[in-house]
Length: 187
Image (cartoon, rainbow, N blue to C red; front, side, top):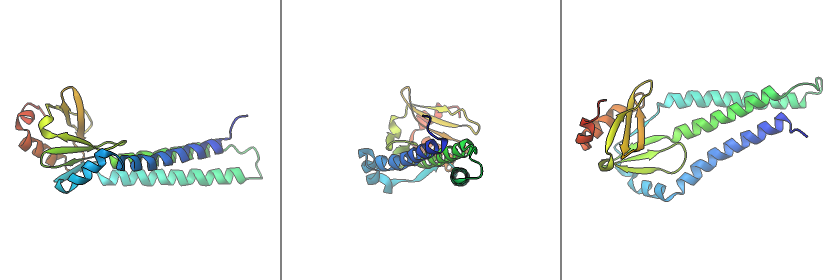
């Protein structure tokens, strides 16, 4: 027996929304998050995606999700056309849920800069502390708007696009706190 598209869509939507909730909860309970809470008063500025991008994507995702759920209800309860195919409504519901999940994790991504540390908040997981003194190399971040990548040895520890809020301030801070590393960068 093949499961119905309605059931599959609701299960996938529920799993994605549950993952979004669990992601935030587990990250907040980590030891690194506890360390971050002790240092957050020292934050000078935060580098992040522009807010309007998240608002636009969240609004679009919620509209798609609502249209998908309403379409699922209408198609499932329709008695006039028993051959109505709920596949389109199911796809719409899954895409809306995936969009809500993506915007949630996108909203978590940021760099919180203190006088001697960059706290990196990835889309998933707990924050990571990167002492500025440990940064060995800056590289140009190849994106549409340019940007910078920081490396410790061969490992990339964070990246910021030139379109992010406070990007210029991040560069100035790196120039002031790690002048030798900044001088070797051709950005």
